[in-house]
Length: 209
Length: 209
Image (cartoon, rainbow over the protein chains, first blue to last red):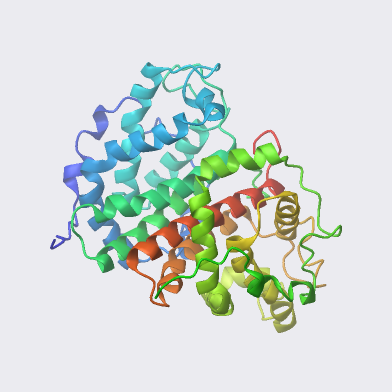
């Protein structure tokens, strides 16, 4: 497959405003405590370069119509673990299909956003919002759910391994060369770690974080 | 290359006792606050299976004599970032070669341990020790260094992307098939995230973590 570079991934940004609770770029999103300099430093440590950003745009074209499957696979994996069920279902671990359906488009959307969104103040603010939605500050509020009100940070971090490791198969699924897959997978790894790192701001004291 | 499965990686565990400050399996290591059940849950979320543990033993054979180069490369990357230098050098960012030399064998050793060590109470305790050595609790103490006394959690997490992404090249460097490299890389990703996740226990309140 010849990968087309897509500098303006309009195909995947359209309809975003139709996702309930997806407040990216709006005043409803939280205000990030981070500065653009903080972000530049994190980008440097995570190793995200302009070349990676190009690779991410290529990845977006490959992942766009697989994001729904990816998130469904993540949820199947987590659903196999009884101790994880109360974070997405009801507190007793029974399923809550309404909550799952309400939050899924935003999770799908994260896959695409991680490949396409410019790293600017809107990005910082929405990552802060996502972080808060994993913790007592805002968990359940967006979808009026009754799941446990805090996802322990250790599970957020641990599951990142599944997101990163499983991405390779999806990136390879449409005929890109092994070199192209390597390049996209490394860039996706850096992007996901950047996102998750920023989400953890809601879990730790500023002096520790 | 035909990979030999090495169930007992004695080649890489010998001489460990000769590394100053490497207190793995001794009473000098910290006591982990985690139980074996906590660890089993983290293994499940990170997705580390017995098949991954076999892949990690294969990876150990490939990475053993590259660990020194890998850690040197990490340090070159970090050394390019002026704001990171005070965590490994002197507080003003000037180099501290003695500290670097003292801590390096332990960092090299981590690469091998991440592929070979059984996940048991000794493992839990030494991961707790490593976590503490990144924070005000124990940073600098082992090597009597004067670097900044706390590595912010965000940089620890962000740099994990470099460790994971760069591992692929090292795993592929000795002629394993792409399928073998995929398998080892996924397992290494899960193992590294498990380690780093446990290290973050030193950064957050138990109720958040």
